[in-house]
Image (cartoon, rainbow, N blue to C red; front, side):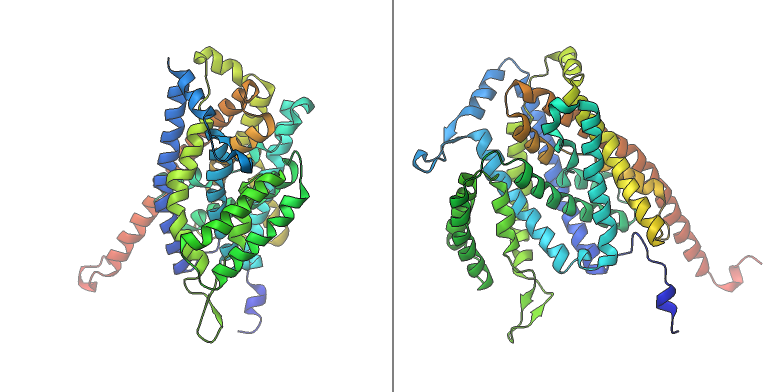
Length: 432
């Protein structure tokens, strides 16, 4: 009927199309393994750093490799943070571009809610951190603002099998936008010195890489040299080298091209590269970074408690456990309040609360920003302990909330299945 579409109420959590749901399910299955490896690597580092052989762990982090002539004689910890994490951000950049070009974020109505939630989930934790930590530690304001997509999706995949797909879609989209904001923050606020010449020269290998991928190049031996040159020049410029991974990803086309040159939504180069590099990112890059970053001496329970009493640590924990959920929920509520949008049928705000708590898992990028803000010395110990404690607590709280909600949805599903079976009984056996 005419006018029906004009009166249709927008939904906050629209059900995605089947291809989108299948793609997200595939990502969840992969991230489950990646999240487990991430947790295992962090635990191994913690155990080693608090064992009688703790000094060997620090010696391993300090081993320098790389060509000194190119100023790339970096220690292993720096290679993990600047080099391997570039792969992580390359995959995040591919996912980001795909979402804006061919995914849910190309639809403004679908994008406005997760984008607003991501912005709220960055702004409020930063304000909470500053309120708790004080002005002397202001440089760490961005530590509790990032959601660890691998860790959060792994937790959701394990505990949320009966939860609606809309929640999974929302978390993935929020995390993608969250990564974009984190990239901008790192490039803008955590660049201590800027050398313009290397940054300008980096455009040349970046352009070569872009031309090659647009012409259909797939061979690693052809693409790796310009990609590495772009990374090395960005590293030399003073901008954090992981930004190079995002820049390279943004040059990769999302849509495939037909013989006539028309763009289609088939399996494009971005999907090809994401499929190839996601296992490397989730299975190697992020766990190795976690291994070299999470190892911190706790000094027993008393030492850990003392570290958590540090204003910086308290600000980080408060930002992750309070700022993240409040920011995400407040932004989502404001969108619902001022756009007349409603929750999708069958969803409740308690589901959104569990998801907002889950977004407080700020592991990989939080550790990275902590190193950029406070270095890797003794001043970084409270930061690492706070990130670990806050992320683990957020994961446990979200697990409790979402598992309870999963039971509710499981009972609803079983009830609907039983009703459907009864509907199929012949009239002869139906109750009057």
